[in-house]
Amino acid sequence: MNINILTFDTIDSTNTEALKQARLGAGEGLCIVARQQTAGRGRHGRTWVSEPDAGLYFSVVLRPKVETQFLPLITLMTGVAVHDTLQEFGIDADIKWVNDLHVDGRKICGILAETTETPKGLAVIVGIGINITGGNASVNERGDRAATSIAEQLSVPAEAAGGALSVPPAVAGGLTKPPSTSELAESLTKYLTYFYDILHSDDGPATIIDEWRKRSTYFSGKPVRVVVDKDIIEGITDGLEPNGALRIKRADGSVSIIQAGDVERLRAGAARHP
Image: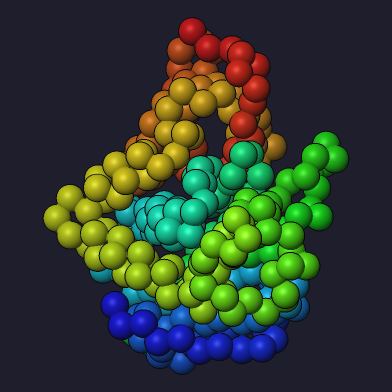
């Protein structure tokens, strides 16, 4: 995959721009990066707060040559790539099925994959938002702080990071400074290219699932509640299907296969299971 990055100071949404570029014939590897989004979005139309220079707002055009049934693995593959990117900068994240990365239960990255038909065939747009200094003020419906950032995890106050970050990871005064957006994008594209190539290799889908397993506590044994449309399913995670769907073992011993839904971690012992 040949990486070609287009940068914008301000844009409505990097995913929207990447979708437009794909429909105009953009090749695989085109990346849209913005300092700020005015209409950033997540799954189910949710808003992704995109303050200036507070995060990496990034979308890439992919034209995968994999069987349709394995397209959902692109989101899992992206989670693995983001995990290793964050690890390179000293952050140990957990991949929450299917499209978030958390640190200590708080969100540091969201992923949004969208498909579109183009004159060159199917394109998959993968949007990635990583909090560098932003996210600390976000709270969930219980009033808990729901988000975190690289700066917070590295114990660097957001105001000390100076807005537009341009300092490479280094130890200064005993504190590690967060990466700049360009450094983060460079690392991210490296890992995306690496794992995307793996996805297209022999046994690629199985390998991606195994790599995801190594990096996520949600693979098995995690008490969760899943909201699918208006249904609520509680149980213990029981691995993934070959296409990346989540298996949930319920209290009666049956297994539900979750292709899409919102997963919430439950406290240990909260979900009944055999």
